[in-house]
Image 1: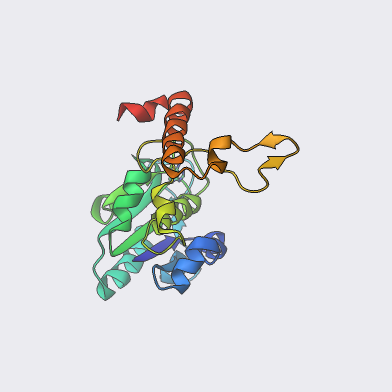
Image 2 (image 1 turned 90 degrees about the vertical axis):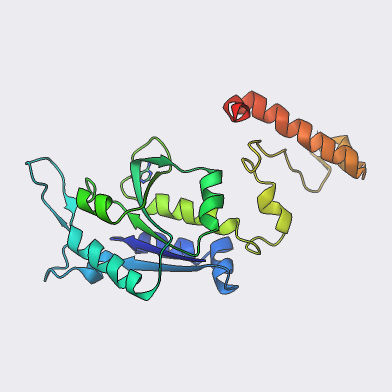
Length: 225
Ligand code: ADE
């Protein structure tokens, strides 16, 4: 899978994309992530990517030209399944959306900035608008990084243990059960007996009961789905 991220601050996400699971998935050839600096596409001699809004509103607006040229250049190379814009007024990102997007071949994520982007970009080029939550970030880079992380980690082979991504919280609308590692007794803090029993069926049952209990207590809304 290939993800192209369009941003005015590439430095904000470059490091993140080369580390940990995403970095490894890229080295293994499971995911290809390309970060594009929108200033490189600006025809302005000062590489400007924003301008004052019509109507005299406050703040700056991202111009059409650099975004349109960058997207056109990418589209000339390959077909894209989705062109996503990160914005607080978009559709709420969640695990089903991460799973769905992980099945796509090529996607573009445009990171919003300033007061927003010229609305014509949203009308003519964007296929999906996505928010990572009901709060306003300074820019869409962190949203793009969150989305990319959630998408890449469910790609087959991205995580060592194949089962691991599937047993994440939210994959079945349940929060994950607690996990423990050695020692079984740390300063008198005990690991639940059942986990030391070696009884696989009982452990599975315990895991499910824990997941149900935690979901009921912490996120009862998930059980309504
Ligand atoms: N840009 C600013 N805030 C955002 C949010 N909550 N989600 C996605 N993109 C954003």
